[in-house]
Image 1 (cartoon, rainbow, N blue to C red):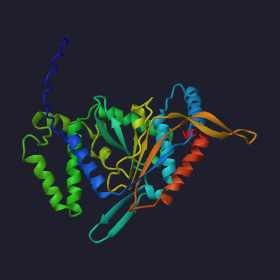
Image 2 (image 1 turned 135 degrees about the vertical axis):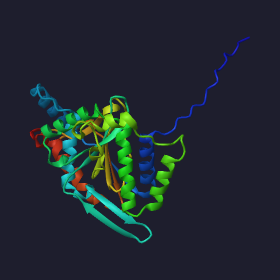
Image 3 (image 1 turned 180 degrees about the vertical axis):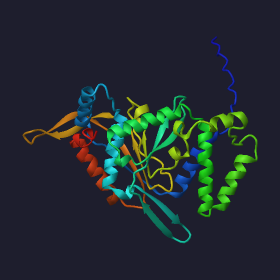
Image 4 (image 1 turned 60 degrees about the vertical axis):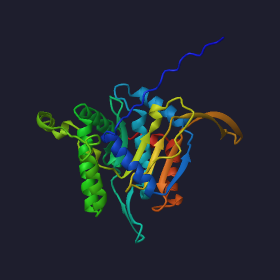
Length: 313
């Protein structure tokens, strides 16, 4: 008679939200409860573009520019063609009043993977006016500053500034609840550095660590999950929009798919090509799809002619 091996009992595990998860949870809740999202899946053929990038990369062995940086440049060029994506919106539901603020500078909020595996959203300031070389220097500088940064302390400063902004816009009750929740219950209390640790951390010059200025919300968010999902068959089809932003763009890992192409004789044929799925999510209160179309058209032009961005050094 067969015997059944004993199944070990699983122990319950309780993990309280740290300040990072609190910020993410708060932003996610506000996003999905207040913004009517529209998501468009854009799957451009990037076969020729990636080949041009490979040749470009091999031709500059002493000066490496990652594909992530190149894609940041590509997307900011697209945003220039569709300025309504680069905006903040304020909407009063009860009074049915809305206001759009369009920005000349493209400040891109980018989720950044830290050495310990945690994530922090860094804002690449004025990315639209930066060349590829300047974008590389900027990202290298952020990585240098992160080595001296206390994640909890940096996020605590973000939380304080965000609470003050809410008070500025008259959200007194929400700000009061936030302060109550972070200070009263010891199990959920947010505890910044104190004493000698605080003094030592404050002594680090701002130019040598990430501060609120680097974490302050940008004008648009670009998230590249493709960097951590290479080889995956899936792709991102929705991304939360962080209010008051009105657009978020999510890049997935490249995929190999059969595509109908036209040869030099005008004949159609099917080839296996490389596509790059992107989710373009926008706030339908702020814009319609026609406002997004120029962005897609500009990206089509760049993927067709990679020199538009690869020669921008």
